[in-house]
Length: 499
Image 1 (cartoon, rainbow, N blue to C red):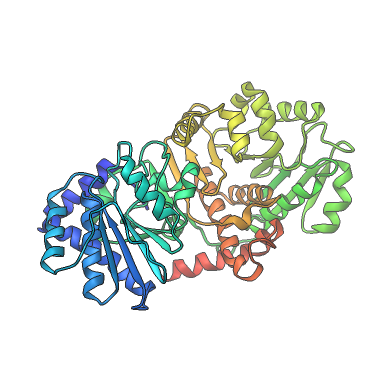
Image 2 (tube, rainbow, N blue to C red):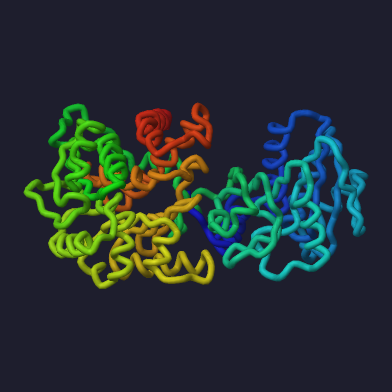
């Protein structure tokens, strides 16, 4: 699903109005009606009181239409119009006229009626056009909304959130009902306090415009995965499914390479070899008999050399930073030609020796968590600056970056893919090692680097989404990612068959 900026979204509205021979008022009514239908479906109890806060721009117009529809359908309604929240637009004026024609009471004073009970607060103060500091009076209103005990729902965006720069204060929404397109700002780590859940509502924007208008940003959901997923062919065998080599482990960290190797095999590749120090030989042979093993060094890797010809290499899980290991990685990278996934201490070693980045095969995949990413890129001013630095870094070294976070970004040059799966259950040790294995296994099967990264991250998150209904968030472990990979694949295949 494409992610458009504010300019393109406004252009999409104009094209839709022209091509569908409707007015801007009719498009506003259509959008508000979709919000109303969602609210009616999820809050069927007619004792639920909706407290709607409207600004005076187009977002406020949406809110006024929603308020009118709720009142007409018999819901208790409190309606406040915040006069300092924007300037009146023609669409807002029409929506307000309909409120008055229907004798719906509303408040414009400074004292807002925050009642108790089954309350749902609707935020329709500002939309995507927010580009200035909030007036103090509006800050006061938003602060009171944020301290409410009911459910807070924002229409299109949480009021106060900027679309293209850091947000300092905004409505803390439980649910955002956004129109047609996810917004890039929703997935920035710094905005996590303002958004808990996003629902995308289809309001019938012109399909040809969406198809023809390019975007460097894409939100990865099941539709995008369907385009990338390649089922195993009926005549496949272990020789056709690819051979993955996982290089890692050191004394006390053999579990990392075991997790990564097992994840690679469970991702669907035909063969997996683990290259690890001798202290891990018996561990991997007993805990993961499906893997082959090559060893070097007693407690850490001192050199990397092998005769086999893997289709992909995963480098770094548990490998440590011993000076001999660092030299081994340097010598290996100078000769490496196969697709690679680089993680953990291998990333840290590269960050200390950035000139080694020139040795990486093109389209290698780096999988840093935030601190590892900072060591590679240097410090950034904010999330938007971080993203620009990651794009520049990816372009300079011809690498794919999997920037792990609550919403993982996959950066391939100027193209950015934002993952939609996963939850807080993944915030546990070892899940990064598993992700390295999954992506390496997909590379070994012949996926191009960007697709391997996108599909691997999606699968990784999907396992947690499936598992938490059985394990809960707290009890989920990295091994559960591996154990639920099969169910994740089955879900993807089932969705592909339905389309």
